[in-house]
Length: 300
Image 1 (tube, helix red, strand yellow):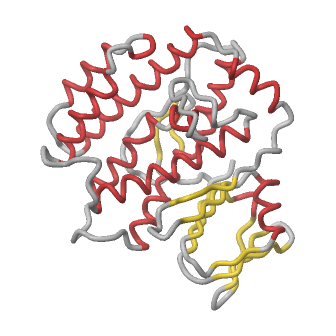
Image 2 (cartoon, one colour):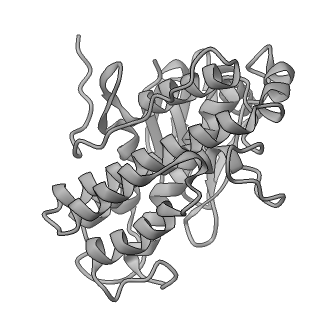
Image 3 (tube, one colour):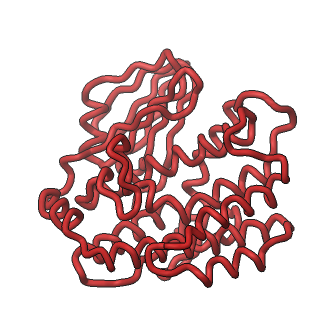
């Protein structure tokens, strides 16, 4: 199982050396491709060779590029790594509406439950109200309890004056963390033959990541918890340490039906369960439960 995330924030040249990524800076570091899940390019003076891109496709690695604001602006996804992509596309397009609505309800329910857990872990009020919202979610979330819960949740977590549209450190950190998760989920979808454009609920014609934006929802509170627990000392732009910590959330443990595992591994299991829903082999999605911010420890 891949587990490492590589973030490069200084000038560097990336090249392929046999089965490893060579990162040339003052010294050259080598990271086996088979250990890498995502690479984040966070500096304007980073160059890479074509064999590196080929290796990313071969090993199923998500490669992120950041924009002028240092937020993830694009992701390179390996679209040829699955032999049944066309068949899965037909399954996505032909999914029965009741199944899609039930899957979306499960996603919303777990998202709200994780938001309640986030408030609990932060010692904030409002846990009971969010748990009540979660219990009331029905097929397709026709009452838009997701939106009602979000409006209440953010005001409890970050204060009544907080608004997601404001330009401030907290929102920049949330956006960065969400973007990393979104790319990792898109990578997982493609690796399992699913197309990120075709969503369960999200269906914007201008969004190439509708399905990723569906599946990300129960993972978002992991970013919220980190940002709430590690506020900036002063308002301003994200510093490299902030970004590294947000990328590292992919290696934080969550609870899954299969046991405790990193968020990155949980994404793989969640995508696999979604495939089973499309294949009509299962009705339930395997979704993460927020348990804290403990980094995953590999057992030897």
